[in-house]
Length: 321
Image (cartoon, rainbow, N blue to C red; front, side):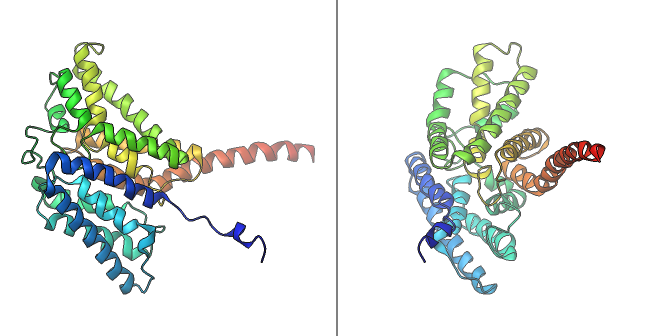
């Protein structure tokens, strides 16, 4: 029928776009860590696709590799782990993500949690010594998150430059701040609504970084304190969450105002967990907690406002009658 195509639901490009974005991070990771990063990435992606295929067969769903969700799980898992982590670690992480988070709910649109965050959190609990072991990478020393957790470090301009170009220990594909900021620009161009999530999350993290630095530093406006604030924004999984997790389409609210609250909530949870957690970075746990409590928070905040608005509109009508 003429015009029937107008009613077809537009296919989402979110996961394909994010998979292409990961190739940028993979290139940086290979340049910094060597071919071992490429090997881990390949094993993780192949494992995720294979597990997703098996999971679809188990629940008798059609396997759809074109939506790129399995590729997203495998690629992002590898990039969140140390480049030199044993190959079985991303395999187990992907197995947990697929079989215990995605498959039981039938599809990516029904899973209440981020599959990748669940897999990484599971491995963080089981093998924290492997998940946060960055000192064996080609770039030696302590990671930014570890240095900041030990007090108020002296940060030089060289340290800041190294953080921007990725010449610091950390997750395989998340250490280069310049690359991550470039991907934020891609999110802005390709998915402007999702950028609302990212911006609200980053602004919350920035406010948190200023407050934490003000508490620990003698002078908030000293060059060292300002450099520490910049490092806090580049540390751990901060930029990773801003690009890949808070924007994840299957879990993100649809309305713009809701997106702002969602980003702020994830930022607040992330800041608090990093202060009270024993882990070097609690990013994966922050994502899961936000996923778990957001539906209730959304209902409480916005349904209450809607109910109050309805009461205000009904009262004048009743008075007229």
